[in-house]
Image (cartoon, rainbow, N blue to C red; front, side, top):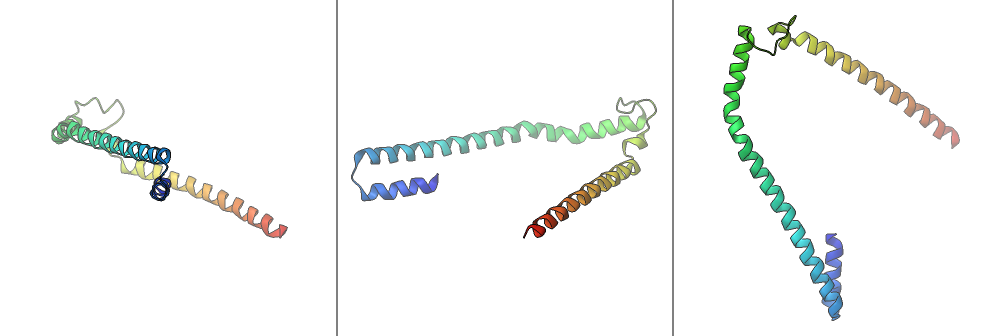
Length: 127
C-alpha cells in the first residue's frame, strides 16, 4: 500500500499529467484520512476502556476481600453443598488436571512425530 503510493508519487514527480496527479493526491488524502480515523478510533477506545475500568479497579480489592470473607465464614453462595473452602483452592486437583493435559499433549506430539517420520520416509523413498 505504502510502496505503491511512493511509486505513484515518484511517477507523478516525473510526469505532468493532471489526471494522474489528481489520482495520486486523492489516494494520498484517502490513505491519510483512513490512517487518522483508525488511529483516532483506537485511542478513543483505549481511553474509554481505561476510564471505564478505573472505577472497577478501585473497588475490586474491597469486593474480593469481602467475598473471600464470606467464603471463609460459610455465608457465600460460591460454595455449594458438598464443597468446602478447601475445594475452592484445591491445588492437588488443579495439578492432576494439568498433568493430564500434559500427558494428552505428549500423546499428540508422539502422533505428530510419527506422521512426520512417515512422510519423511515416503519423500526419501521417492528420490
